[in-house]
Structures are given as C-alpha cells and as structure tokens.
Image 1 (cartoon, rainbow, N blue to C red):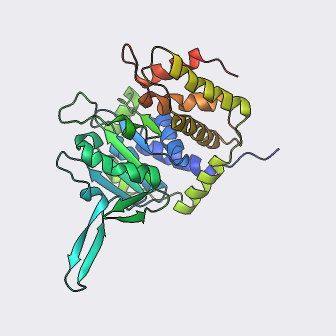
Image 2 (image 1 turned 180 degrees about the vertical axis):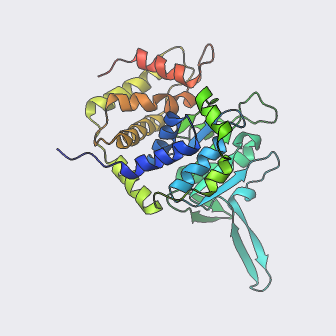
Image 3 (image 1 turned 120 degrees about the horizontal axis):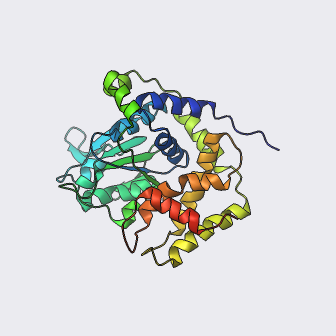
Length: 308
C-alpha cells in the first residue's frame, strides 16, 4: 500500500491562515481545497466579514502573484483583460495586459459590475487564456479567480448568471465570527498590518506539484457511483428546478480528492465527498420551493442519497 501524502506544507498554510482569519477553520480548508482542485472560488457574504482578507492571505502564503480588481457598475471588459495602445515610437499597437494576467485575481464585489464586465472572466476561468482583439494569450500558471460578492438584496448588485456561477468550483460564506474570535479581533492587531508581515510558505511550483498529487488520489468505483447517485437525485427530485451538471460531478470528485489530500490520505472516502458537497453543489441548485442555505442543501442531499 502506498504511504499517505505528507500534508506538512499545506498544514502550515492552513495554520498560518488561521492566525489571520480567526475562527473560520472549515472555510479556510474549503478555500485551500478549491485551489488544490484547480477551481475558482466565490465568497458570498456581508461586507466587513473578511472576504478580501481571506483571498489576500491565501495568495501571500502560497507565494502567488496577486491582483485585486474592484468591480464597479461602470467597469468595461478592457479594464480586466487589457487594451492595445498605439506606440508612436514603434509605429505599432502595443498590448498592455490587464490585471487578469496574474496568478490570483481577486474580483472584489463581482456582482457590482454589469453582466458585460462579468462575462469578461468567463473564458479566463474556463480556458485559462483570454482572447483580446483576435489574439489568444495564455494566462500564468497556476491561475485562480477568487471572487467576492455581496448578497443580492443589497443596493447596486447584478446577480451572476447561471453560466458564470457554474464556473466557480465552490461558493462559501464566512458569516459573523463567534464571540471568542471577535474578541480576539478587537484585542489584536489590525489585519492589514498582519497581512503585510506574511511570508510565503510555498512556491507556485510546489503548489502545482500538490495539485498533481491531489488529481492522482485514488477514487474507488463505488465512490463514483455515490457521486452519480447524488447528481441523479438532483435531476429527478421535485424540490430542485435544475439538477447538477456533469461539470458539477467532475468538480465534486476533484474537490473531494483535494480534501482527502489535506487530511493526509492517498484515497478518497465518502466523508470527503460529503465535506465538500454543500460548497460545490449549493450555488448550482435552485430550490423549487422555499429558499435554503448551503448547509441545508448539503444535509438534504446527504440524507436523501444512501452511501454505497
């Protein structure tokens, strides 16, 4: 039997992130699993609960180039992708790359931009390349989009369309800190000062290697049966208007592999699938009846589909 992978560096990343984002161990673990699975992350919550800080923290600890883009209602696709400007000295147009050409793009308050600006991210998120003015340009590797969005009921928001939501492997919520974590925040140093002192614990090359290890973790046929049963249930049960797509099934397997790697195992168990289920599935499902939060959706699926 193969020895389990050593999650030492990844454990150190989680521990260091937990010193910045207090009391949110599960959300941090999900976020890192999302990046290990080569997915993009959507963080939805109220302003001021640490969404931007979480994204910046992970990028710094993983040693990745980082760009923050503040989405606004007057943003244009060129503000994200870049634009060609005529160079008089050279007598030709010269392309000036936009902030998308980095390893981690923080799309802050993505739902404050119009759908036209939001769609500029679609090709980048799916193909890891962008086409600008007829030329296709590859993006750096690894490449992640970490987007934050405010609740849809807040003023000045444009809900993300289903096609854009489906590009995000996971959606997580941070919520308010518990009493002990909030007291530690009040008594501690400013988070921005702590961020400035962060030193990388991994390199991009090491992260790429961990992604390859996650993708190679063994998944038994019975576990694939379980994933298929979960997807089939969402497609046939009357409480959902639309079921999980094949892309969602692939994402669920990839996320479960990454969660297992963080646990230090070389194979995936059903509890790994269940641990990431709500983060992977909830934003892809629309309830036909009363609205449910992500945890309620995850529990309903786990209860409805028996383990293999």
